[in-house]
Amino acid sequence: MDFMRSNKALSGSPRSTRTSEIRIVKLLFLLFLAALLVAAPSCRMLVREVFKSPKVRVTSVKLSSNPLLSKEPPEIVLYLAVMNPNSYALIVPRYNYSVIVGKQQLASGETNEQFRLEPSQETMVALPVVLNPSAFSIALQEFIETRTVPYEFTGSLDVEAPLVGVMKAPFHRTGEIDPLEFLRKKAIPLN
Image 1 (tube, rainbow, N blue to C red):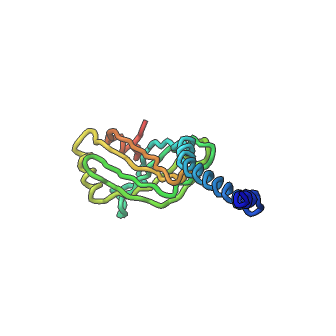
Image 2: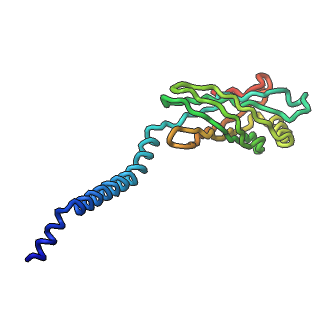
Image 3: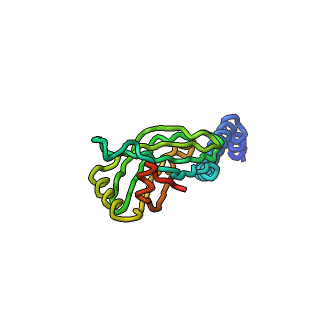
């Protein structure tokens, strides 16, 4: 019985109380880590749900110069209207594009020209695109031979969003070009 009392006396000692406190702190820390591991992916999903991807549309395409008179490769400018529905500004560090007229891919590539999308408003963006001269010549022949020529402008903007990272905002536009109308206006009217 004396042996039992001595064990009982130890359980109430300051040293055993200290050990219990450390165990409780460790347990609380492990519970906190477990809650953090469970909450982190759901917080990221919540941020993705709160982030609204910008809407991009091609508004017009214009020739930069007369390709028949210039010795430089032909260049066009794609005009985009980009609506940022978020209440904070977004940065676009790069974009990629592809231009197909008729059956010819006139241009494709990626550019690292950075621009800013202001919060809750539409930003007009001009994207200069240098065309492949040989493909442009073939497309020009299609222009001359037919009444209308199909076109396709595609690409995407890489948008840097806070806490979400880089998101793609795609754009795509197809239709037909009337060669006479195009030469008269030096632009492709896109309505």
